[in-house]
Structures are given as structure tokens and as C-alpha cells.
Image 1 (cartoon, rainbow, N blue to C red):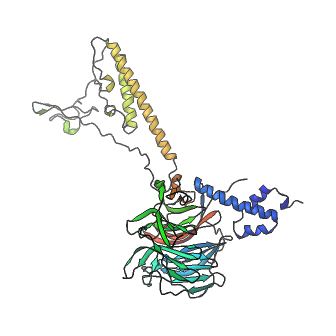
Image 2: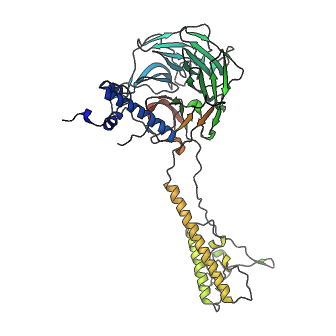
Image 3: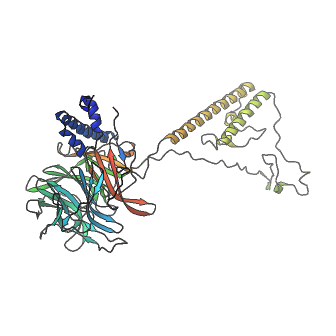
Length: 554
């Protein structure tokens, strides 16, 4: 009887590729040396496939990771929370909602797709949002944040400069007191460089109790837990909050985007060099600015292999071609005036209304004043052909609700006996026989009819293409990709936005959400929570979405 070890390597890799790329897949490495090599190939394939999908914009969203499981524990809906991925788990702290702020800690098992709330001890942080949460060894470091007053909450509005550490092994919170350090700050950023936690920007309460944006840089010595403020050259970024901070290497970090206040959004990029005693800011050149993400200050981002993936609203889309229907108004002819007297004319349909009846004459005895057709000439066949073409053009133009490219006279009602068409506005040449002039007029009519048919055919094709075109949704999250692999290889550094396809929208994209969190897993991005608008109200959500690459068929 055959067993799994007798299968080819390609078949085993395909089977292993269906496992979640976390604990279960890692445990398969313990089977044998062959499985260990195959598992490494699967991890490599997942990373390469996801990176290729980012560059080619060939990804998809999965919105129901819990499936039909009986979910007992799940975090409350929230926004402006903090999250970080450590191994097989995504940790989420705090956030805000309609009822106030939270100070709870949750973790999501990425292998089993389940939520857990650990029983923690120690000094809990205050309920707050917009805090920074980073990992240092086996510890979570939480700093800053704010709590806003909501309609149904009795919590006062506060800015915090608390520093808490959470031991992942002992599940214990510890507060770190200090006398010198940053002012109470929220919506700032933090990153780990060697044994330092570097903090930049944010919305802060200054020494004179004025709340404003800041561009200060602080770092925390993680060995002694002492705050220090480094010396920096005068050239600095504009004060901001809600920006992104990315680790380039141990001595450099990248700052992108942010907000400086109402109607003051930033799309610039800076790099901070921390190698010397005096730190230095450097502005970066940006390529493909037209593919820049919008409203970066209130949307999440995650780093994937020297690329920053940012979510945001759908970029501006071109207006679809619309063919307005123009109603043709009946032609109103002015009445002729002779010796200051208006001469009554018969209507073109051969009827006279009551206002046009002659006084003293009954309606039954009154004969309608109809314009008589002109007397037939010798070339009756040419006249009949001309009238037939004229009627055909008028009928087709009236059925098509006014063709804008047609001469206006084609939509005028037919007046028997008088031919007023462009084809017949040919100057009479006494030297040419009458039959040749008639033939030229008929030829002009045929050309116009062919032109009208072509215009109508082209317009119908355009309408069919517009109907068949799949219009992208405008209320979904779009994906923007920024490549920062060349920020240190060129002088000055260069940041490049990758050209998106289909306006950055993927299948299954969630509706527009702001103030959510996004972290990078293995071959996927995890989006959680946020604030979304429903009709006229804004509500928090606790939905979780996965951005991954399409599965390949063996």
C-alpha cells in the first residue's frame, strides 16, 4: 500500500501549500529531512507569490476567515487600536468606540483563525487609542495615546505619556515611571533599532498646555528605560501625526505621509540617519507621484519585502462616456408680415385649431388650409426618389431621438412641394442639363444616408461597450504599493510608487474603512477593525480581512 512518502515532491508541496503558513506548516518540518526541505520551499513560494502579486496587482481579499465556527470570544468593534504580529499571533490593544476607549489585550491565532483574550496581571494601561505598540524580544512596549470624549461616554478627554511593558511569558503588565521624557502624545510612530525605541511626531500637549502637532524625535534606551533626546540638524520634516515609520536598517528609518491639521495632508518622504552623534534628516525624491495613496494619515500600512503596502480610498476615476438624449423641439416658423398685418399660415399637419378658424364660418364648413404639393415636373422619377430619401432620413432621425451629428433640417417635418435639404442646395448651372443636376443631388443624399448609418452604428457600439465595462466600486479600499528599496542606494534617496491596475481594487475588497490596523503575516496581510460610514452614521467594526494571492492549480 502506497504512503505519502512515495509521492513526488511536487505533489507533496502542493498538499503542504494548502496548510496555514504558521504553526501547522512549521510542525511538518519535524517529520523528516525531506519534509523540512519541502516546507522551506513552500514558505519561499508563498513569499514570492505574494510579492509577485503585489507588483502585478494580482491579489484577492478573503473576508470570512472564521467560517462557520462557533465563535465564543471576539473583540468588541473598535477603531484607532494598535496591533503587532509575533510568530503565529496578532496582538491587538485598546482602541476606541462609540461607548468609549478600551484597555483590553487580545491575540488572534493565525493558524487556527481564532480569537483569545489572555488573563493578564499587573498594572493595566489606561483605556486609550492611537498608541504605539512594538515588540522587543519577549516584551510588548506600549507608549502614549489619547482618549476622546464621545456622546455615550463619561471618560474625559486626555493625552497620555504612559509607558507600559507586557511580558508575553508571564502575561503581566508593568508601568515604567520616568521624570524626563516626551510630552503626552498620540498618533505618533515608534520603531526598534538595536536597543533603542525611536519615537517621532504625533499630536502632543506642549509645556504651556497647548495641543499641537510636533516633529520631535525621542528614543528610549531599552536597557535602562531612560528617555533621551538626540541632537539633530536644523533641517526637519513639518510637524505631523498619523504618518508611517518604517525601519530601513539599524541606523536609518523612513517617515512617509501624515497630517499637519485640517486640510493639511502630506505626501512627502524623509529618511533619518542615526549613525552619528548628531542625527540628520534627508528629504527623498518621489517617482510616479500620480500613483500616490490618498489620505494616508487615517489608513493603515504594512511592510512586505522593502515595499510599503498602504490602503486608502479609490483614486480618482475618469468620467464614463455618456450620450445625453436631446429632445428635438418642433420648429416654430415666424409668421410673415405684410403691411403690418400678420398673414395666417396653415399648420404643417393640414389641420386648423379653433383659434385659427375664420369668424362666421363653422368648423364643418371650413376647409383646412393645406399647403398643396408642387406641380409635378417632367422628371417625376427624380422627385419621387428625392422625397423617398427625405422621408427615410426624417423618420430615422426622429426614431433615434435626435442625432446630434445630423443637419438640423433633417428633423424638420416634411413640407410637400418644397425640398429644403443640403443635398439640393446646389447652385443651378444653366450650362448643365437638368438631369445631371438631379443625379448629383441624389448622390449627395445617398452619401448623407451612409454617413448617418455609420454614425448610428458607431454610437450603438459605444453604448454596448459602456454597458459591458465593469465599473469599479468607488466605496471600497484600494491598495497602493510604495517601493523603498533604493532609498539608500542612490544619492539623493529615491522612493517609487508602483503603477496600480484597476484603480488598486481587488476581488472581495472591503468597504471603505478608516482608522483600522493592518499587519503583515506570511504570504498575506491581515486587516482588523476600523470605522466605517453607514448612510449618515459612523460605526466601528470588528471584522477581519485577509489580503492574499490567488491559489494556483497544479
